[in-house]
Image (tube, rainbow, N blue to C red; front, side, top):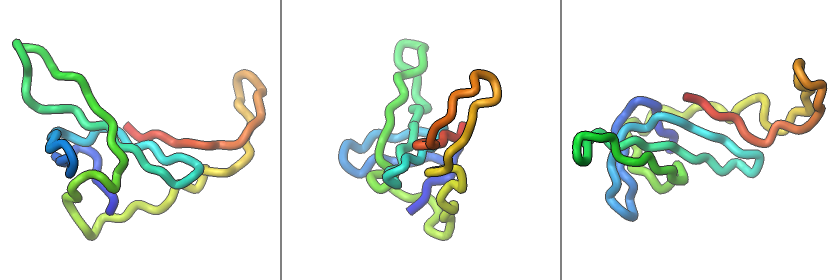
Length: 92
């Protein structure tokens, strides 16, 4: 049940509602969605929260992004030369 970024979502447990602004996929296929509330509190934005994707009310059941092709690949950082396995990918 993939969540589209920039859509309003609701956490099924707490009822927390806001705009999905980030999606992070992990090596174990866990997907976390960052949610920013639209309402202000005392004129200021409220803190963003992160939820497992499966825990959020889906907005479009036909949207199902493919698992990221980089997860699990061994890569080398061009700047530092550090080599390792990609364990998560974030989209903003």
